Length: 237
Image 1 (cartoon, rainbow, N blue to C red):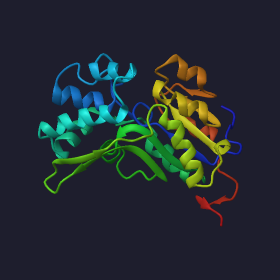
Image 2: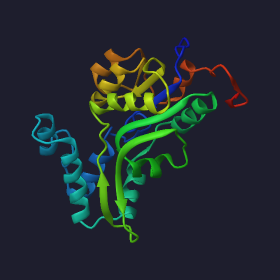
Image 3: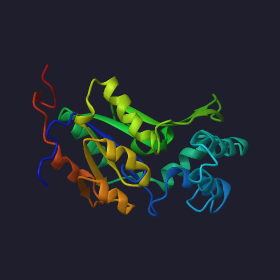
């Protein structure tokens, strides 16, 4: 691949399917709902998904229904983390890719409808400059005490790029986005450089400036050489 990062200063990533994977390409929501609520819960054939797509259910309501069910079932942080750790794994090369991008002088952000717990369990100590995800709060005994639905999934991912541009004084013309599925389309269309990783939807492939077929994320680094002014793995002030 030819270097394509001319002028790019920030690389944003989706999480489920892009940095974290399930053998059957399920999201963390599908995995947790199927394990704790029963087969068929939380998938693309579920009633809540259909209600969301048809406009009968807002995204925040959908999150509240799912997490509320987990809370009523008495699920704890430990129980959720055990399933996430068992069912999901890092995409090969994900942690190295994020680390090297930052060493080369790029800002790195995550914009995803995943859970913050997914990042903690699967990606561990990986450092990023900003992460937008759904969040679950736990009490001292590890029980679910509350949650926050991200406003930055689906179409909201494009708004997240606007926010990141303002927060880091980084124009949209300097932001790249990496995603894999239909809920990444708004961000892929908004970003200056759109990259599809193992695209699960033909529209994602079509929207992308570059496609990485996978299964390893590290070929992405071929698009992003060290930025000017980076010396010894850090920005030369």
